[in-house]
Amino acid sequence: MRERVFIPASPCGAQTADAETTVSEIGLSLTADTGEAPGLLQSALTQGVTYWHARDRASLAAAAAEVREQAVIGVQADAASLAEDCAEALAVAGGAPVDALWAHMTTAGLDALEPALVSLQGFQQAGKTRAYGFSLEGLSDHDQLAAGEWAIQKGVPLLLIAYSLHESQVGRDLFRLAEGSPTRFIVALPQETTGLDLWLGADLAEIVSSLARKTRQLRFLTESGRSLAQAAIKFALAQPSVACVLPSVRTVADLQAAVSAAESPDLSRAELNRIDDLVAHGFHLQPGEMPTVYNG
Image 1 (cartoon, rainbow, N blue to C red):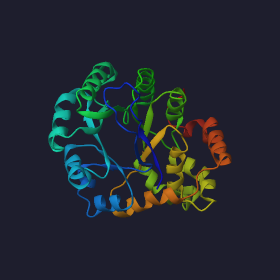
Image 2: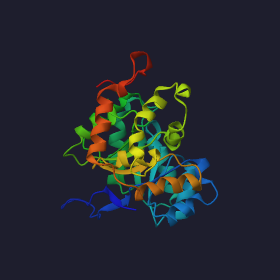
Image 3: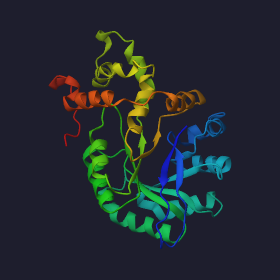
Image 4: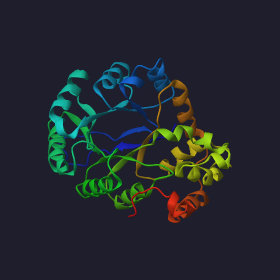
């Protein structure tokens, strides 16, 4: 599996002289449930997954016990309680610096961005975390774009966003805004991504949701031998500023399916152009079929 830059090397004159850190292009999103899934953590190590995103204390403890020296661990903390969550993360990690501390913005609101950034920068300067970023997953399209644009302007090194084949406009705008900046992205794929291929065999009469209708129009991505779930991962990885993709993984079988995407063909320029055309035309859905989404 290929590796991508996650934390760039420290510039000359920086207080700490950290070397560049890379991670596997496909990572593992951990919750209390996945952290306890039989064989999942060890399987991830065996298959070369080197970025683990811990979404709660239980999953952080499981990750720290399993891979502390073998993978980069991101710790998700509530933006409203960063100090407490950072202290807990340090305790779980045995006092060692956190690889990456993420301020999760869903419950805090956009007014919390500035104080959260001050806290994150302070933790880094104090040697409590090597890197930091904002997790924007779960925000409305409008708020995700507003927070992401603000963070990019402030030079925030890491952003975690939701991004998919079906709903990609906010991500596209953020990637464009980040061009030429140091900001790197982690992309969280929605849970339904793992089941995309099931829609391809359904009768048209059974396709009633906008998601399913869009999926049928993306079947051309399977013509080169990849599955549609693999194509969704490759779609995110087509962005140069994406460091890692976090598929929805709950079992070893899910993990193996996600990791197999690394060996599937990259999306061609022609395929990407065709996706662009579908997005530009709203997937040719009728007005009554279109969900209410961000319009730029």
